[in-house]
Image 1 (cartoon, rainbow, N blue to C red):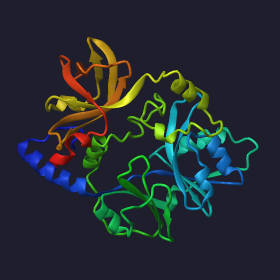
Image 2 (cartoon, rainbow, N blue to C red):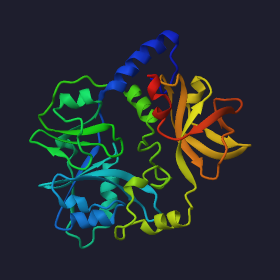
Image 3 (spheres, rainbow, N blue to C red):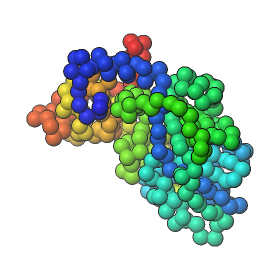
Image 4 (cartoon, one colour):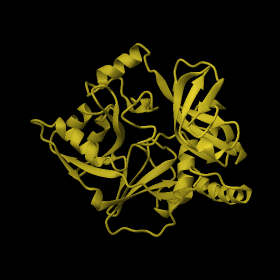
Length: 325
């Protein structure tokens, strides 16, 4: 809705009201994939396959986000792993469980590791806002590193989106709730600078470019892609970074992806667009060259006859306008 068209003045007032409500709290289905890793070597195996230090998962109930990357350090997915009595539940991005499972199984040779798809056993929700936490009897200080596991649900604070919680409802547990408008959730995601799989998180970028450096351990043992990430860090060779972009005004043509230029030279690209009620203008996420040190940038896509000014800013956008809501 906010990501494909611009409302008129009356529509904006209505959307702004809905937006402010969503800002206070929302619930949305996220349809994550769910894999269960079992076997005596499951933890050591997934540790060798991903970027973060997973030693915390030796403790039942612990959870940890980590990134799966290729030998060239390109992203396969960012996953959250929960240590349970039955094995290691692994949440993948929506629609990516099959690819993650296939990737991991490529490396299982003599390891005592089994991987099963368990998505049918859960309904996965994202909660945003303390009022939504209360609906599921969750404390506002819910930990991102320790899951609350009951016979009906598994809940933890999302490490990628810290203001949100993830609730894995077990089959048969279906509390009543009103789901948020997806377009509003997408707008808030963009404002908060949260990268999304298939948009900012793709096989074209590495974790350092995508703002996932917090999930990359500099001290753990070897893992797939480690040498490439180490060289990028040591020799400061990260070529682009996840960035926020603000347009000077509102135009529905600004809601389509395009390229970013500096003095006619391509220095970036956009990946997610929306109209922000908080800023009353169009904003976007995308990637900008680390070599750019000035902000006389322009944006161009197939809908625009000429390039228009665009301003790059650090993320999240909410730092800019939070006090105006």
